[in-house]
Amino acid sequence: MSLSINSRVASGLLLCVMALCAFIGSAATPASQYGNLTLVADGYVWIENIWVNSQPHGDWLLFFSDSFRGEVVRVANDGNFTNELWVTGFYRVLGFSPSLDQSELFAVGWTSSTDYKIIAFSVATPQTWRMVATTELGGNGLGIDLLTNTLYTAGEFIPGNGVVFSMNMTGVVSNSTPTINVSIPALYDHGLTAADGLWVYVSEVLNATVRRYNISHASPTGGRAEWINSYKAPGMEMLDDFSVSTELCQSRTATMFGADFWAGKVIAFAADGSDQTSVELVSGLYSPTSVRPGPLSDEGRRTLYISEGGGFDVFMNNRRLWKLTLDEAFQC
Image (cartoon, rainbow, N blue to C red; front, side, top):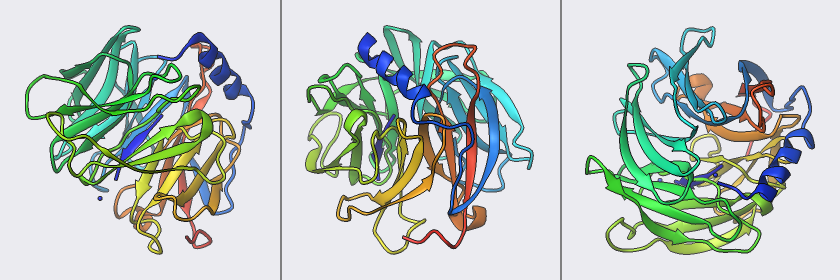
């Protein structure tokens, strides 16, 4: 689930709704009229988030979290998508964001249903991590603004209690500070990604609304983010995690690639809400949870990695991770 900056505990009722989503609005085999889909990983319960290596020739391609199992998996850059269990022992592992040099990945790691941590784990050594911060509410989406060394996470999934926290990463351990308060009945925030010190996007999953904030004057110790606009994500029923890219679509400033958990689709549209048209890139997914662009030179950045979730039991282990290679038919 997601919040994104551009250059989950839910009530029992909400869990029931999301469990229903896992079986309705999904199909066994995804399809795309804009490219080829390749299976990267399968046999997981709830793949929640992905982070892709920005260096295309590194020894690892990406990391992903199996939220239900509380694990992180590394996928090798060996042409075979070799999966390696990398971090274990958590109650839940959710959103990711990289450190400046990508030697670590920050992650939302719950140690119990009531103990919410932000951790940083090594990308070079398995089962090596440190605690960075504690949040008073359960975080999910995660993003870092590398210009100000500020980490953001979207917390609390009981409808009406949504909040985004910010944390200063200069210290060894930091407390979280509410930066954005969102309290709308029957809705909640669901994501975060940080990048250029300017914009943060918050998705309200249940009604596919995007809330856009300017963070150029926000900080964990001072100014707050400024709300700019909100809009209904075109062509979407539920907006889970998403990515904002300035590279895949040259015709606009930024494009949002969103995972529609309910409809089983990936949709592309203008990130600033200025254009209410959209492109359906993939359909037939099992409860998609996140979308990430591929490495910078990977087929000219014309790739997306897509995760599936929705499993609530270890026996529901048919969730997958896909790579979509876009062809020339996709223009925006």
